[in-house]
Amino acid sequence: MTTSPIRVEPADTPMTHRQRINALIGLLLGMFVALMSATIVSNALPTIITQLHGTQDQYTWVVTATLLASTAATPIWGKLSDVFSKKLLVQLSLAVFTIGSMLAGLSTTVPMLIGFRVVQGLGLGGMQSLVMIVIASMFSPRERGRYQGAIAGVMSIATVAGPLLGGVIVDTSWLGWRWTFYVCVPLAVIAMIVVQRTLNLPVIRREVHIDYAGALLISAGVSVLLIWVTLAGKNFDWASATSFGLVALGLALLAVSVWVESRAKDPIIPLYLFKDRTTTLATIASIAVGVALFGGAVFLGQYFQIARGYSPTAAGLLTLPMVIGSLVSATVSGRLITRFGRWKGYLVAGSVVMALGFGLLATIDSTTDMTLVGCYLFTLGVGMGMTMQNLVLAVQNTIAPRNLGAATSVVTFFRSLGGAAGVSILGAVLSNHVADLIAQGLRAVGITQTGSGGAGLSNLNELPAPIEAIVRGAYGDGTARIFLVSMGMALVGTLAVLFIKEIALNTLNAEDQRRAELIEEEIVLSAADADADLAHAVTGDAIADDTRPVTSATAEVTGSPDAARNS
Image 1 (cartoon, one colour):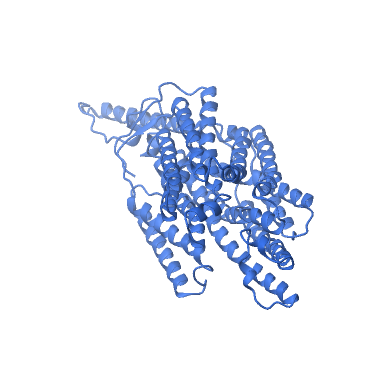
Image 2: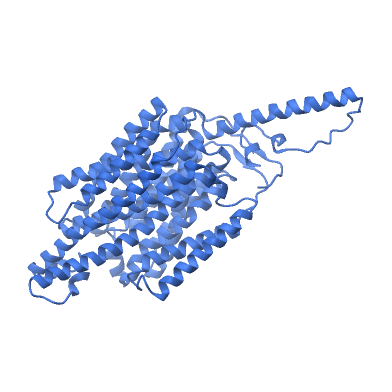
């Protein structure tokens, strides 16, 4: 990190409580738009691919491109928030996302659409990390629990609203699939205006060393590994030369990035963060939670549509018990955390309940009563609500304010990474298991060919009734294995959570903590200066010129606490 003088320009006036709430509304609106855009194309993709004359491989990449870009960009946005204006970065990420959305809607070929989805993903990665970072800057860890319900509600509702809205838009003849991208633009613009008018945080001005090599190597290494888990089992075998080559390349790039980060003046991911036990264990838990949540939840829609025969819109509505469970548990646990200042018990309980929810879902098949399925999903949602936000809270409460952005983005990054890997790995497990179940079912009725293993919604209704029943039953029975694997990963997360040490929640937000630390350092420095002057006076030395070196604590600071800790 550079030791050049730092100047922190103050906000015009301190933010009032009302301004902070208004800023929170703008931030959550931006998060809602970004998360909804990531899922809105799921029900529209069959129509998009058909009209743009795409292939099945391109179908996968329309989704994967955004996931890759957002995951790789998350730690970079987080690190930039430690050295640049958070307000400007939030607006920039929204602008990048909006531009990507407009261009995606104008696409005339699938490769164009994939490229513009990458641009969308870059903005999405910024919103995923920056919103949590800015909220931590405005609200203390103790106070933040009061707003966890709103945050969890936005995340859950966006996940469900996306596919629902996408299905409605595609089914509306006078709109068409392009509006699945355009519809997010006005909401993103409104979010930018609200943030501009209400967010009022200090701006850091200093010489910055950007770790371009680290950013490039981390993004490249992660992208290669995500490409591997996405394509392996589909485009090439897991045990093949291509598979081994991609793994070797990805690991080599990440190994070089670790070497570069250990020597960089201002690394994208400071390695010393992992010396903190809470950060390391929360990272492990985040990977496990990401695999379980993203990997398992993605296949719920497939279960409802293929195994149970519901429409895309109905499939989205059937996930509401999970959303309600998450919203209720996040709200209740957050308020209790704010009231009593204790958080680990809720984190442990949430991870256990989440594992239980996956365990219950691992018992479903194609004939399970839908009321029971709804109860299982509610249980899973309760666990989710108490787990996801509290992992971030635990890290933000422990880490030094100067590393708030980097640490928050690390947790978010590894959760997204686990989710990306989970979708691909669990998808391969499901595909192979369903193929075996279909083959067994066909042999039972005297049919030896297994070509129906690739049947889905597009041709399921064209199959003879007996074969259609076999395929639906295979998807219903096979999905249970996905949730069984998810339960195993959730238990890994529970084990990591058990070893996290609970630290009392701080009652100061990140900016106030920096101000308090700066005042303390200035008091210590003033005492040292007084002792030095006294020594000069006692020995009779002239004090004509003060040549003592300038330290970070003597940096020019006007109304903000960021300086000393960021030098």
